[in-house]
Amino acid sequence: MILERNNLFNVTQLEIQLRNSPLQDRIQDLKQLTYLYMLRRAAIKEIGTKLENLDDEFSIIHQHNPIHLIEERIKSPASLFEKLQRKNLDFTIESINKNILDIAGIRVITNYLDDIFRVVQVLIDQDDVKLIKRKDYINHPKANGYRSVHIVVSVPVFLSNNTHKDVPVEIQIRTVGMEMWSSLEHKLRYKNFHSKDTANQHAAKLKEYSQKLYDIEVGMQQISKDIEKN
Ligand code: GTP
Ligand code: MG
Image (cartoon, rainbow, N blue to C red):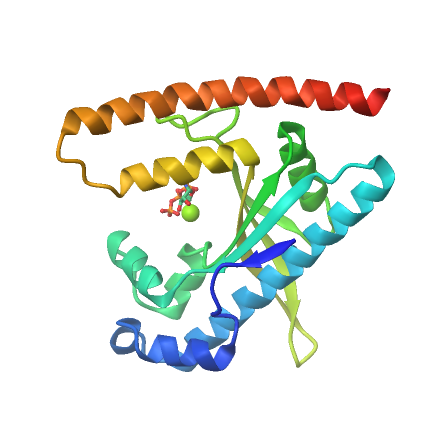
């Protein structure tokens, strides 16, 4: 199942949003930016379809769906603006193309731990998919306990003149348990507690729970494998 996080997928709407965003005064050619967004949106659809097809095939061969949910989102013009500013990057199409690889974002929520690595591998093994960046926060969790695998891949998008462009998509892949954890951690991060102690206690608990959830997911994976064998 694919869930679209916002409805920026309509080009006309996108143009209106870009025109009303702070980017308007900073980027000279808004039409080029609309084109860039159109390509990123197309790349999301290409990867989304690949993931759905893989999940379908897998369920026939192994009687198991590795993917629980796919979420797609396009970075809003406002947060693109914020990111360019934060990273002190040029407000040009060239700079966005080169530096901002997460305008197209997909989150894949898998049922089990092994599914994460399976999905990543079969996707990047496809002839037309190129791996650009990979971060494994599962074998190397962040200090706060965050776990997930992040990859940036490029996929060809074919154009009306019969050429193609390789367009980047950022994919975050995590289990249901990791997704639950990171939503709560995200909430905690953007909440201002009156007491610093309370915030620290919550953060410490979350770190502990990250490990516990991981242990539970390893255990459940074992049970699932055993069921499949019998
Ligand atoms: P950016 O250029 O800011 O995107 O940095 P990056 O690409 O080096 O960051 P990274 O790949 O580590 O993280 C990108 C995204 O992963 C974030 O926008 C979040 O959605 C998610 N993420 C990373 N770290 C955390 C974390 O500690 N907690 C939660 N809840 N999400 C995280
Ligand atoms: Mg990123």
